[in-house]
Length: 183
Image (cartoon, rainbow, N blue to C red; front, side, top):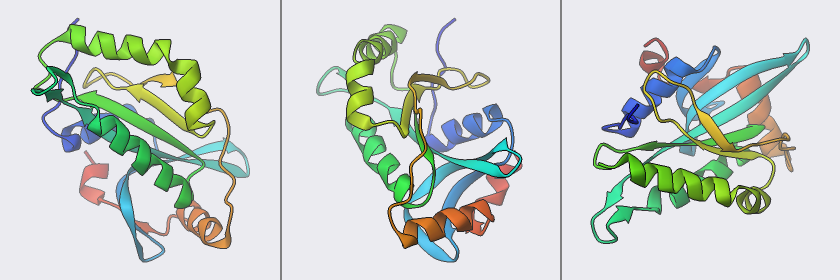
């Protein structure tokens, strides 16, 4: 089955929101009244025990065809990694970088080559990125996220500001796009 392509990151976001189970908040732009940059594309609050929840932030990026290199452009991948790391500063436990593919990527083979490269470099990338960051692809609009590099531990806040942000997120003191949440 051919992979789906997305027109925009907003279309990718809508598809991801539909694929996630529950307690999902798109486009977090402020925490406890304080604007954040970058915004958190999707925040998911998951109950992991009776008295504990996990905050997972999803950063979404579209990989595009680059006419100069005649292949996938890597700028979205690198930008996504950088923005993902800022999510940790904003209080999330784990971060997921979701890579979709823009409609200008005409070949499924190009996507397969990229995914094969990710699988081949999985151990190395996991060591470089650490245990808090998951990276994978979203290939089908009605499908689910496919992790390639898994996050296997929770980030511990290093300072009071990060702890305050985490507490605010857990108590749902944040601003998000309610229109996207109800789709």
